Image (cartoon, rainbow, N blue to C red; front, side, top):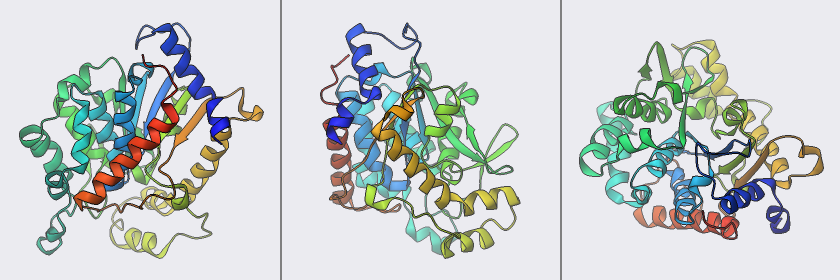
Length: 326
């Protein structure tokens, strides 16, 4: 696999761009090279470590756009900001306590306080320079799920001011039954991107990406099983938490495991980058190793999160270290 990776078209285009010193908005190669960041609640700490590795290796200017789902959208914003080292905030116990509030179950409040994180912590306590994200030469595409249709929505066209960006990040991570009601943007109500598109590479391909580097938060051993029927948990959430919503949204939620299993199979095929794929887009995934510890969506232990971040950082560095710095 390492030999296959070394010849992968995704890595080759990065090397060519680095050699040409090409910059966002000034390309001449005709390619659209995208970074897609998977989330998954606090499991997104892994892909956040990968994202920081890309920045520290000097490779970020080689990309034209960053797509993010859920926690991956939050990491994408930090990566494109004036202070990308803020990605390490995922390992900060203050961050975890601000986001994960298990005691809120007893108060009928959101267990995952995405609004407090984005609008209070990222403004007052651990500032995210929202203006610098909007001004970045690399496009930022946070994804969410339309409550009416159950389909993925790209929020890039809505990002006209800092408030829009805050709402987009909230919407992308608005986990049903954990983070409260859907987020309103324009005439849409939006839930977490993970309902419709957990791994944000398909939207990138729909938008014409020629090359996609996917930062995965799940280990290979965690890949979704191709179920013949939705899980008991999915049926419970649909029957209780989504009973007032549209059939389209409930169907999207129930089919998440099947879609994720299909995504895993497709991405595994793309990793090989064989002759049958030579005429299409090049897609390469970076995953944490199976030997690493699995991370739960609501993990809050600082030591566990720090280790997960470093695992992600090391995984990305191992794959990308031979690409020349820009």
